[in-house]
Length: 352
Figure (cartoon, one colour):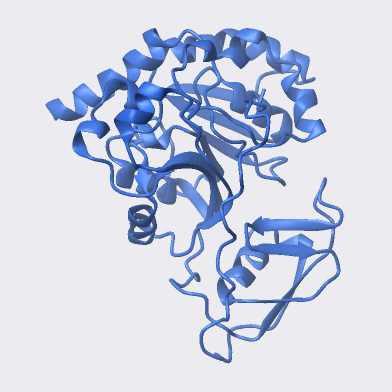
């Protein structure tokens, strides 16, 4: 318990005292280079600079089709993503932001009412709660009560990641979605690096080894998670690069659905899925992940898991799935994940 407390104190100190804004970051790990849609940029333009400057995300985990949904933002910080989600869920939806750093939440709460007014809400639909992402019950979040869980470069900071993902699985409704961005490592982190205060605070010390992440997800009930995007992390600090040596880091955006029908391998049931082209801002194509691109109107053979993801979730009204699981044809001939995408040429943070 003392070790857990020391870990938490390091993280709280880094984000509550060491970092006053993005300019204080010592590496490029907590830097987002994901493209931002014009619609999302318009919402972000309504945010105060104080909120934007305290954004330390490594991706843009904002899924489509969340109007009217109840969304949980884990590690919401000063509220940048929570306020963006607030506009997207609209007056019939709600957002819960959970963070255990009081200084960050103070910023978010200070801006809550004015931000609601700026996006045209009569009252704020965001509830910021002080709490640990490892214990969402203590934050008042009930079983099967959340439509979508998002998180942006925060889960790596937890000292009990399995408990975090187990809690996420508990609070998601059947068919609900986890959509998050985080830093991952290509090997298990040496203990000395994992305890390094700067590496921990900069989202690398606690980075999960990708294969351990795969095993963990299956243990807690996410049989098949999908990588939506990935890019190599640019550390941009010679001293820290020398310290981490040959460890390679990637920023990945991942989705996983709370579906009991998913299997731990791609199985062929002869199913076909057709995207109808009806998801806003996805008129001609929809990328489920980095190796499943659906083109509007084009029939696409899919494994049983993919058929469930597009046919048994909030995506279902936008797809036509042909076939069921009555007949099994063996393993599905998957092409495997696409190679890691290169970082943007300019290397600058763009998620503001």
